[in-house]
Length: 198
Image (tube, rainbow, N blue to C red; front, side, top):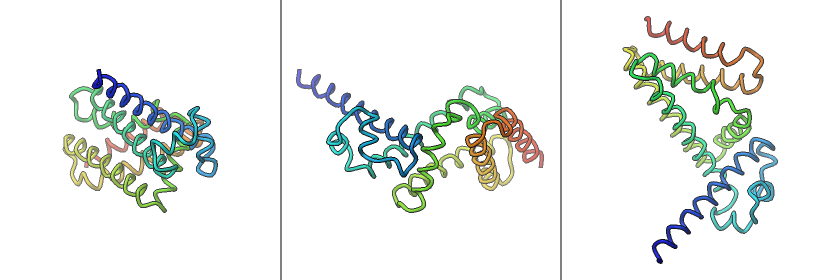
């Protein structure tokens, strides 16, 4: 009986932590970094400020956890896109790169949270470490996909393509009518074709 009760308590704690993380991402998206505070997060999550402090050391720890959770979620989306592309190396590479132009990555709310994370990565060592690890992981997986396609200098190409995808994603997030997701996909496909033909 005790083991069952402990397992239930753990699930409840994990669920509450997840709710607070989700609420933090939503507040960052809606109000930006300046409007993200304990009161706004707790109101969004429907909990008391004491509960936030129970599960996290404070708002800074919660924002760090939110960046980690968001990065993990993006990693899972990109991995799923690759797996769904089948066995063809070029199709897997393109699926990885173009997942950034499809839901849920194109969710407009993600922009607000992501730009807050980027801003904090410039001044907070923990956020900078998450950013560095996340981007290094993305580029490492991209490099592996490029090597599978026979790319020469896959390290340099991974950096170049990451910057291209980030730039296109940012522009689409700021103005979805600027050129459209399918145009972004086409641009990436053409860039990959040109880079791999060398």
